[in-house]
Amino acid sequence: MTLFKQIAIMLSIFLVIILTTVLTLNFQSANTSVQDRLYEDAKNTASSLSLSLGSANGDVSMMSTMINANFDSGNYLIISLVDVDDVLLYERTAESEYSEVPTWFLENVTIEAPVASANVSAGWSQVGILNVQSDVAFAYKQLYTILMNLLISFGLITIIALIVLYSILAAILKPLKEVQKQAEAVGRNEFIFQKNIPKTKEFKEVVLGMNKMVSKVKAMFDKGNAELKRQKELEYIDPTTKLRNRKYLIDKLPEYLKIDAASKGGVNIMTSLSGLVEANEQIGHRDVDQLFNDIATIFRNNAQIYEDPLIARMNGTEFSILLPDCPSVNGLAIAEGISRDAGKAIAKYELDADVVFISLGVYQYNYKQNIGQLLSGSDNALAQAKFKDSKIHLDKSLEDEEVMGKDDWRAVINKAIDTNSFEFVSWTAVDSKAKKIAHHALSLTMQADDKKYFYGQFMASANQIGLSSKIYQNIMRMMFKSPDMKLKNNVCSIRLSFEYMDMRETYTELSDLLKTYAYQLPFKLILEIPDKMFRQNSTQIQEYKALFEKYNIDMGIYEFIGESDDYQYLQDLRPVYIKGEPSYFLSQSDQALSALRLITDTVGISLIATGVMSMEALEKLQAKDIYVIQGRVTEMIELV
Image 1 (cartoon, rainbow, N blue to C red):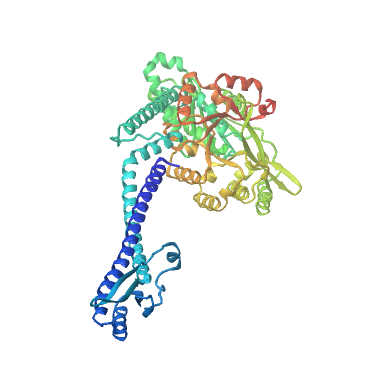
Image 2 (cartoon, rainbow, N blue to C red; image 1 turned 45 degrees about the vertical axis):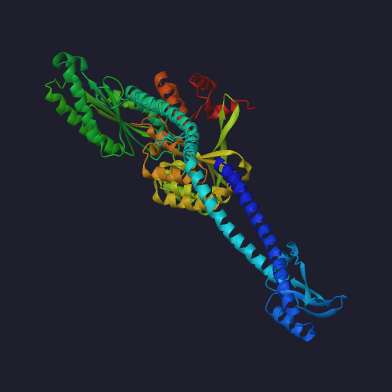
């Protein structure tokens, strides 16, 4: 219960007790006053009527007439006249009428009407005694009316008093509410600085303390952000040409060489500039650097016809141009264009074309290769190119023979989608330090014609024929509508592709699913989104964040290599973890990893290495304080 509620309830009870006490005392006073008035009315009537009866000189008929007249004009229960021997001379009575008074009031309120008596005399001779008693029914009606008026007035006073009380409390405790919001934001790793400083001394000290803490944490994040950006420049950018470098290429290639890669393959053009020593002697280092910049511009201009080309300077004289989805024929045409434009650039510096020239090895790769195979094939193509007159050579990777063609895969996958023939399998992410499961990473299998296909066997083909997003649509509906109860009370993650999340209809579909089924999900869900989408920090990803937060679903990042120009998005979107390849974490300098650690620790983000296959790799990761891992090595860890 909040402090506001506690104080409000306490003061409300105190106020109600006071008002109830005052109301009770007022009612009791009114009750006593009514009873006193009943006696006074009866006494006055008895006194005045006895004098009138004395003038009748003992005539009973005249006295009865006078008694009737008084009885009919007032509210009396009984008026009686007895002689000196206590013999009843005349009596007039009435039946009390309580129809306007509720039973509960009659049962709980007692009103007694005393009998007033007066002597009736004719001269010096006593005629008898007159007895008068007022009717309590009239008194009950009056007292009930008084009670109702008191209840209404005190009820209004109570309501007004409570409204005023709550308003005053809300105004007094408003700074505390802001402090609570600030504290909750800190708990969510958000940095909120409270500008309105309360005047209440205790609240003021708390707010100033919270602001100071938030400022320090924000400064830590900004320091880590600035340092990581600086390290990124050092680690990933060639200082002369401003192209990416070899390290970036190595860290980025896993995005293209994976089973669910959006691209099935392409070409990598490995280029080399020969005659660098002679060029430096002839035109000087500064002009040679400018030549490299001109050649870098040539690379960009010729590669821009393909989306997201990856151009990297491998060393002092060699460059790599990765073009996903580029056929070998187009790759050769681009290489020829680069060779022609580079020749013109070399000629501009009046260099001997037989000494200073560019060689281009065009290598057609496929997604099934690893990094070593791609680079080895590219180097071999470059070596062959140097011995050719054209200085261009094409090599192709040996592709595995496809078991099924595109049409066959399309039929199999469409059938699986129509019959919901997908199943979840889970792999564990393990905290190797605590020896506990961090979460379960969900993957897929597909059942088709009595044959089970694992994720790596069908997803690449699904990407190539444009059915991967339909698969994700199917499995998300399956996850929410028919969740696996074996995962109950666990934390589970599932990886969603950039293409699926980038479709506008995905947001609408997920909104409908979450609205209907999210609260029935038996396990805690983490949706993993590629860093490629996360780092855009676009309106689209912010909408996803708001949607998932509404239903208590967390987000994680995968394929992280720290290539963003600014890491503010990590604070704004606050994923629960970042997943990267072991090669990325192990290749980072201590300064870069410390800067990343500073950022993630500040906003409560965990670092997870995926695809860890050996204990040797695990030990190297642990030496860099990376303890949560995925991969085959998790099977070698004995859990507690």
